[in-house]
Every structure is written in structure tokens, then in C-alpha cells.
Length: 136
Length: 136
DNA sequence: CTTGACTCTGTACTATAGTACAGGGTGTAG
DNA sequence: CTACACCCTGTACTATAGTACAGAGTCAAG
Image (cartoon, rainbow over all chains, first blue to last red; front, side, top):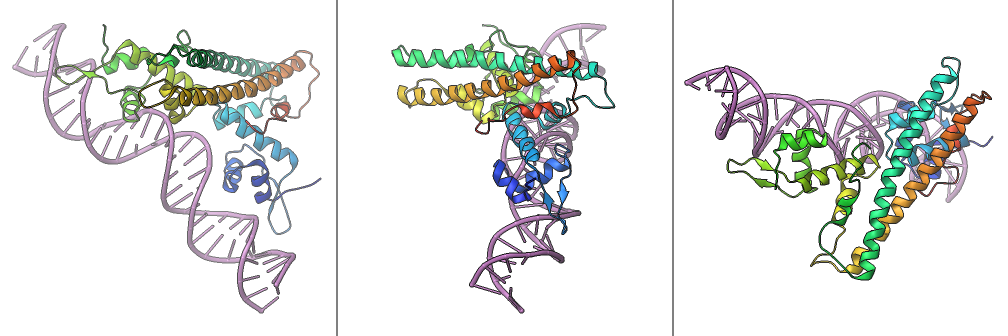
């Protein structure tokens, strides 16, 4: 299995090299293997994990939430039902976010149409978004 | 037109009272009218704006990005084309976020199915998400 | 055999987004 | 008329998520 140093992984994933140490500290990634002289050696799975973290952050999840997402799996300490419950909760959150974004998308599209038809107003059209979406 | 004090608006929108002063400082809301003795008086539009801000934050937008979204309108300093361009860019970002969330949703659903069928594994299934989504 | 590019650790600093006072004014209820 | 719940300002503190740097080790190329 091919391994990467910290600098290589950072480059590969487009993150700052120090962020990798930070994620390790925050337990978002497992402490990686070490070379003989103590260099961290990362696997491709580590790279996938880092990419997942960065993407999830862009979708509005905090590192703590991302940790919860990454821990969603069945293990010796946890029943399937408990994982199922948590997963369903996460699914709900994700669906809620999608609804919010779709409502924003609709408003942006409407703005574009209005702009293209040149029937312009100077009020702020985007406030129309989330009109009935207080519970997000 | 009905007006609200800072405390009332904070309660109405479920935010900390000090956050309202912060948003004013960050220019996310206009400085509100003042009563004779200098109390801030907010309108319903201010409330809508605050709710928009909070919702957009939950969708992963920073306050700076939210400011950009709120400024998307035609005014004396800016041409329609320029607004149109910015709006289309924002639309793209929103659509990208939706794609990311949909891919996450798919993985969560798959996990739920697997869990319900009791064909369980102990690897981390969520890493399947974003496999080809590095560009988000 | 040393110079430059990497790595290690620990610690300190930064940006963003608030949150919490302190010290003072206002205004209604008892 | 005074106590309590508000509001005002300014300033200081906090949490989250990094980012930078100092001081030291490693190693390949010139």
C-alpha cells in the first residue's frame, strides 16, 4: 500500500499541512503509522477522510458534527438500533439543509429571470427566501 | 408599522441580543431607527433579514458570503449585468452544495437500509460519500 | 560535508462569530 | 420614590478552526 507524508497528503487534499495535525488532535483521523524516524505515513483512506471532512465543512457541518458522521457505524459498544437512530437524525438534518438550499436556489433563479427580462426593482429579493423556513 | 426593541427582535428570531449589535457592526443589517431616548427600533423586514442570516449560516455560508447574497440587487452603482453575473455565480455555489448534500443523503439512506436488513459491516460507510466530489 | 527541503514537537498567534460584562440611563409597577 | 427590567456604549472574553513559528532532527544533491 502506497503511503504519503504529511506534506504530500496536505498537497493531495488541498489543505494546510498543520490542519492535518489539528485533525489528528481533534480525533477526526486516527494517529497515522510512523516511519522509522517518526514521520507520519498516511494511507489513501486517510486522504478520503480528509476530503470528506473538507467537503462536509463546506456544507455547513462543524468538526464535531463531522466526527459524529464519521462514527456512524456498528461496533462492539453500540447497538444497531442506536446507530440507526442517529443515522436517521443525520438524514433529517441533511434533508432540511437541502430544502433550505432549494429555496435559496429558487429565489436566485427568479432574480436571474427578472434581471434578464429587465423588469428590475431595487428592493432586496433574496429576503423572500426562507419565508416559511424558520425551523431550519 | 410595528416596531420592535432589540430584546423583542432577539426573542422573535431566537438569537442572542448581542448578536444583533454584532450584525449591525458587520453591516449585515442597516442601523435601525432610534426612539427618542436612543433605543433601536426594528421593523419586520429587519426580522426577515435576521432569519435569513441565521438560515444561511446553517447552510454553510459565512457572514461575508451572506452579505454578498443580501447585496444582490440592482442599484445606482451597479449594472444589471454585474448583478446577473454574481447571482449566477451564487446559484452555482448553491447547486454545488445541493449536490454534495444529496450525495451525503444517498450514503445515509444506504446505511439505514443496510442496518434494517441487518447485513452489517464495521467499516466506515460514510467515506463513500464525495468519492468523486473533490471540487466542491 | 554542508545546504535546502523536508519532518518532528510544543507553543503562540489569528480570524470569525459571537457572548459577557461594567457602568450608566429610562420607565413602569408597587 | 425606588426596584426591576429594560436599553445604551465600550471593552473584554470565549469557542472554533485553524496557522505560524521556534528549535531540533533527517536526508538527498551538489
